[in-house]
Amino acid sequence: MKELIKAFKSLSDETRLRTLNVLLEKECCVCEVMQALGISQTRASRSLMILHQAGFLRLRKEGLWSLYSIDKREMKKFYPLLVKAMKQGLAGSIVSDSDRERLKGAKRTGPGCGRGVKKGAD
Amino acid sequence: MKELIKAFKSLSDETRLRTLNVLLEKECCVCEVMQALGISQTRASRSLMILHQAGFLRLRKEGLWSLYSIDKREMKKFYPLLVKAMKQGLAGSIVSDSDRERLKGAKRTGPGCGRGVKKGAD
DNA sequence: TAAAAACATCCTTATATGCGCATATTGTGT
DNA sequence: ACACAATATGCGCATATAAGGATGTTTTTA
Image 1 (cartoon, rainbow over the protein chains, first blue to last red):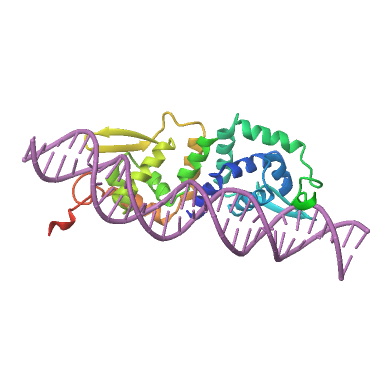
Image 2: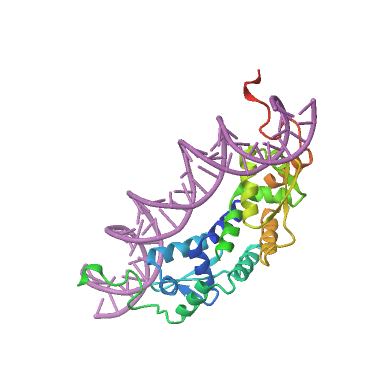
């Protein structure tokens, strides 16, 4: 029951739904999500972490990257249903479509990744 | 998208999951839910209201009673999936089982309903 | 018309949540 | 060892949420 609540709770947030949505496209590192959604690094990291703790995501470390992907292996029986429901409920959403679009141009390294440009640089 | 979030949010609370669970048994008035879960009238009423606003429940007034039931008619396409996921995630839960059990003994009128006995009566 | 029953709602309080900023952590290349 | 890149985390703030008690509302009944 606690587990189910945590699952639902992790899905009741726009940032996390958008995050899960781009992960439906492909495995992503934090900065790819960050670029796709146009959000801060902290926000992207936390979003992914929470979905991971809720059991939706698989985490794979590769060098500097934390690669998150939808967990298709050890998903509890009800997780696929939740993802399916999300897909249906998100169909035709402007935001989520453009997130997927921006994902295509996202880089795993370079400007726009990590903490990005130092603020007092100029 | 907002709608989907509201749906998920309404399900990420123990009281509301338990409420929905007893409604799977049968249409209930507020005080039946209140007795089945052993919670206050305020809490039962709000719980039902939120599930209703999220689109899960149908409301039918009959005399003094507000009768809530799971909306099987106008459910959005993804609602059945959410309910199904909930059922699976709740299977074998002690709390939800005893809620269903107590529902059998619940009355729609009499002591334990409404605000109950007046406090300064003695 | 007045009292009672079943609900809904207002007000208040305690707690949880989302987020940004600054900073810590960990891996990489020189 | 050092600097840098990608990510994680502690802290604080603003806001959202859940819940209880008291009270308002509507319908039935005496």
